[in-house]
Image (tube, rainbow, N blue to C red; front, side, top):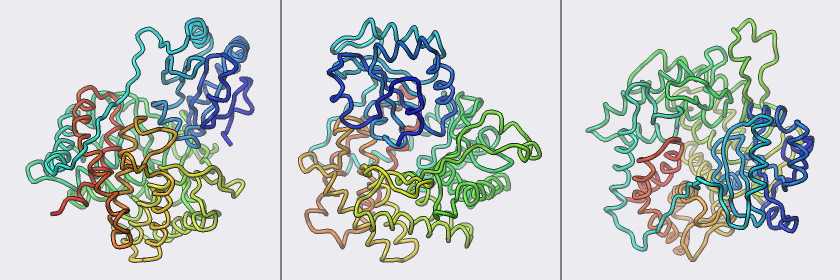
Length: 503
């Protein structure tokens, strides 16, 4: 269940795939609130704005209100192209998009917005000046090896050209660690830019350690709002931190640095203690933000409760975390870490085998799995278990990967287009998101090649062909990007190209 809406004074419907269609008879516009259990500003919005009587009364009278937990209903987040949380989407009474924005509005400011929306919505209307950012794509009908070879080069050069030479990191807006992007640059270095990549990544991680890192307990915060790395968002995520640890160790291997090593060791310690739940035997995903706690020194922190660790496990986030930590083991020879990784793999495998269906998330409090898993869960799990099979030389993990892969083909493969599709998102819903998940599945299929029949083997080339012209989309994205998280979606497909193209 979503974590807070049942206690709200606002009459919220809980999100489901059919909730918009089922409620259109009311003839009201929609207020969709995207929120997360780990999000500080979501709590601020709920406690400061959605408790104000005139706001509550107006929403309940004039809107159909829908609460969306972004971790449970990740596909809705993708479908509506939400950016961050809290995120607000207003729909016309017929369900078409009217307006959306990210962030928190307080009291009367929010009341003014909902009154204006209510007065101006209509079938197919959009707010004045509002432009929805939709990435359009015309898939390739035939495979060009030149397109495949040029794509990784264009990605590397495009990212490096947008390196912030003054403040470091990527772009001129908010700053964050992008583990998949940074690792890809490091692992596929070209001779002519190898030194440039090393300098770029080392300076970026040193800056991240200075500004979005917890030097007392270890762990990196989610991101910083500004170009100069100020105003951190203090949530800690397991997958971000696992990827950061791997990046730091690999950087240190090439260019030894006590500063990088210390941060890597402390962050790994944070993952294996604070975020590992020994009761259920796996890593948890989130520690909530607390804007006061992280200003305390070590002595002061001991006198207060630490920020809450959310006792839920999301299949795709755990799989991403473990995919990084499997590689971290090679740098540490840490027996405790290896034991925790294997226990976490066993935890996921038990769900896959016992439920006979991949699930979205696990409640540690109730010891129950909930919700059918989506394409993201299937793709990340297939990718994880084929990596585990290779790393631990264990064919049993390959059996699990094969089981997940065949379930993915059965549930999500679209024969007409030749790619895997998340039904809630649709083939044109978010092309970069779908490209990433298709890339992960292709990597898994390449690892299971001998177990595939001819029809299944042909899926690999069809997926590679479909997205082979995404380099053209990338050019447009690089031109006007503000939020650079989109680069993470390209890496999975680029890695699939590396496996597909003969040396």
